[in-house]
Image (cartoon, rainbow, N blue to C red):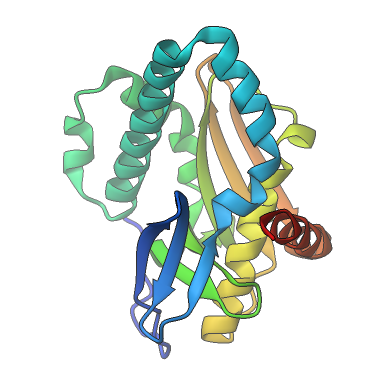
Length: 221
């Protein structure tokens, strides 16, 4: 059984997601527009993604992308149900999602005292919005936690965007609630059987986050 913290004294924003000129944006009830966190922190990957799509062909690229997106979504659903103590997570029919879930479960079991799952957040200071997978204690320390799937084991120097993403969510959470969470955690399950745990201090990524936001917006002008 996982403990969910119910006694909260803050109001989370209501956000609507829309495409504006083909770019994902978020809007709050006050009419403010925000860039997508994942789009901003990952924008440097676009050239490599374009080259990959050209090398494998559009049909193959679209198929692989759809499969990866579906698998990631199913894994997130299973983890969320598990953390809510909903037994129906075991009924998921996708055997690959089940394999990834069983692989990452020993890491997920380190989570407790959960403040939120799939929590929509935004920061007027950063001009970003997005959805945090999990806000909870990880090994007893308040954390922003993201769940990731991968085809193979990743070296952390190639996934800095995940740490920037979690840092952004940490800053959004603090701006919204006044609660500072400095530990960021990325839990990754890999198709080759590895499971990876990255525990970082968000303070190491605040300046790189500001830098990439600035670079992204300079390119949008």
